[in-house]
Image (cartoon, rainbow, N blue to C red; front, side):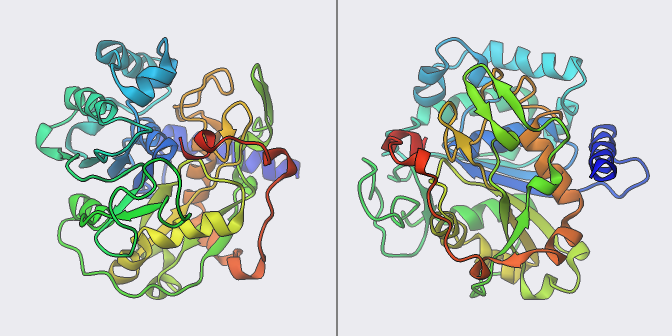
Amino acid sequence: MACFAMGVFLLSLLHTAGGVGATPLRFSVSGQSAGGSMAVNHLFAYSSHVDGATIAAGSPYGCGVQPDEEDRCYYGHVDIKASIAWVYWRHEQGLIDDPANLKNIPVLLFNGKWDECVYTRVMQDTYKQLRFFMNESMIFQRFSTHAAHVWSLDNGQCSCGTCSDFVGSLECCDVNNCNYDLSGDSLRAFYGEIKPRKVAHPTLVHVDQWKYLPPEATFNATIGELPRGGLWKFALVYVPESCKERVDSCRIHVNYHGCIKKRLDRRRLWATSINLNEYAEANDIIVVYPQAAGSHGEGIGCWNWGDEKADHYFDTRRAVQLRTIMNLLEDLPNAIQNAKNVEELGNVEEDSEDANVSVASLVV
């Protein structure tokens, strides 16, 4: 056990140093809601590795440390100058990659007009921050649909605006058919021309995330505890048929969910509803769906995207959650080889402590 912990620690140092002697890891990243803000953090912290990013109803980098962050990060009026200064401060500390890397990374920003949880003003603030660092032609704004707080599709029975008040079927509170293909538009922004989506096979594999935690991952926070870094035990991974025997030769995409109850059926519903797997099957892309456990302080099933009290380095290369995901991505061939099919697990019941969680904490 001690040898393994030292191995993971040394691997995390290689990440920070840029992976000396290794082929640089490349991936694209996306996320919605809390997952959108995590995708922002991943983009800034590891910009030297990112091929592209989609931020759906997320918030600017550093938003969570601003005064009145609950208002700013959900309804807008972010202090853009302060958020830019936060980027430079993190870089001066040696905690994130050089923001100059961002200049030519394609980033797609999505928010629906009927989103009553994260207002479009927040995504406009994200655009203003990114514009300072990026070539403006590489930022794609998609704010014209009437989507609620969901991921938009161009197919399906969930009409646009369904679940705007968080009432409706679970499926329709994940996705809406707003005649806009967010997944396909994202991948085209990252990689140019891509093949039309194909039928995805039903198998997801689960990968032990805890295996990749840095040694200091269990820590106490002033607002409570985040055991094992606030991560659920496993991540879900979709591996296209064409990638099963050649994992190293396939592209990688990381998708961060929003705050979701700690139930396997709920997590699987997200991972199979947003059309990423269908595009992945057609275009040789492995999709990694990391899984958050959260806490009562962070929100059950939520990522720590903005709380430095829980993890002082939450948005940097030293962040427990981001480092764990990077460790997993670096070891992805082995992780997949040792994984199990989700179908073998049965359903994971809610923790009893989750019983009284409010609707708002599940979707933000």
